[in-house]
Amino acid sequence: MRDHFEIRDGDLAGRIGRLEVPRAGVTVETPALLPVVNPNIDTIPPAKLESEFGAEILITNSYIIKKNDHLREEALDVGLHEMLDFHGAIMTDSGSFQLAEYGEIDTTTEEILQFQHDIGTDIATPVDIPTPPDVDREQAEEELEVTKQAIADAEAAETGDMLLNAPVQGSTYPDLREEAGRHAAASDLDVFPVGAVVPMMNAYRYADMVDAVAAAKRGLTVDAPVHLFGAGHPMMLALAVALGCDLFDSAAYALYARDGRYLTVRGTEHLEDLEYFPCTCPICTEYSPDDLRAKGSKRQEKLLAEHNLHVTFAELRRIKQAIRDGDLMELVEERARSHPAMLDGYRALLDHVDQLEREDPASKGAFFYASNESAHRPEVVRHHDRLDRLTAEGDVLLTEGGTPSNDEYDSVWRVVPPFGPFPRALSETYPLTAEVPERLDRDAYEQAARGVARLADENPDASLTLAHDDWPASALELVPGSVTTESLAAVTERLAKEAMADGSAADTDE
Ligand SMILES: [Zn+2]
Image 1 (cartoon, rainbow, N blue to C red):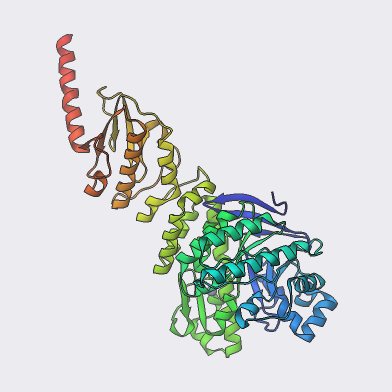
Image 2 (image 1 turned 180 degrees about the vertical axis):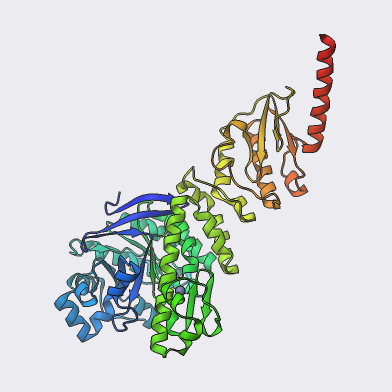
């Protein structure tokens, strides 16, 4: 186990954890947001991030500090915590971003780690190469080798109790991301940033982001704290947490504010287009959009940045409560409706349902069926897997209705879309207690039919009859020929008649 990271609670692959940062003498609760502090631009002072927003950790850039004579001297002289006036944990980046942006930087992993150590960084970063999406494979492989070397250099460096980032790169090649994750996890470094996803997020390529993170997570161990580097838009946080990301950094709150953009959990708005603020943060309570537009640009930027940060921290709290309540998937589904690209991200998440299923708790509070995608949730997959272990013998009625009063069948199982069949004794267990709408979609019936097929496969000697309540043809086609299918109405009528006939026969006997 990585002894500075402890997982306290989980839902899907998301978790609430505690990251111990020994050099700062603090423990950060995750998922955590690290506001990005540009040492040259004082949008919201770090002391205010701490006192008013509850920030336990922030991130700034050691390379920018090193390149600026004044900042460098001050940081070396008094240390980062005093310079920034911040008591929480401080992570620093190494200049990798500048390397990606400008093609070169004049420092090495060894040098910049030493500098980060000297200025009092709590979590430091080596010089990796953030390989952008869609480069050719050769470039992705070559750059990954450089990143691996940076991790090795970091392992060899004398860094005391400063924690170290082991970046996971690999561009848009899932196998490289997975390999990078495995390599990073095998090092004795501490925190695992999944890098170079910003270009994907900026282009609304959430499905690609999900695939990259899912691949990195396959390589990393479950106990590795994962940082989704450069991700701080509140709209996508639930999705990223569900994938198993623990740390996020937001430059968005300040960058977006600079050009008049207002963050919400449903996307980005432009201040110039807003007549109302859909938010109850202190800024949105005190000011109207008109009030904000009437401010000077500096003041407006600061106030917008504060709102942007409030809405982001609020979303993280909502996500943590969802993990506690076991309804993170419901929140992800809700957020997926904010933009078609987010829906793609959510559907991509469901492509990795087997991977999620391994970490998802077996029992939670409630399962709300909220869209046809709900039919593909990990709980449904898990139920189908469970059918392999259940035995059906003799004549078995699988019914959406009640238990018939006669004994024509050896046993009567319930069938509930989207799960499929199960013995009645399991009716009160999660997720079979799901709240399902009366007007179901095709996916729910088709998944239930797949469950029936699975049961039939595993129990070839049983004689199964499915009493279904008007299932669509696309679902009935998935039920194997060995299963007798009858409509629920027909079965109910037949059983009632038989019961009556039995009853009169019994009367005659007397
Ligand atoms: Zn607000």
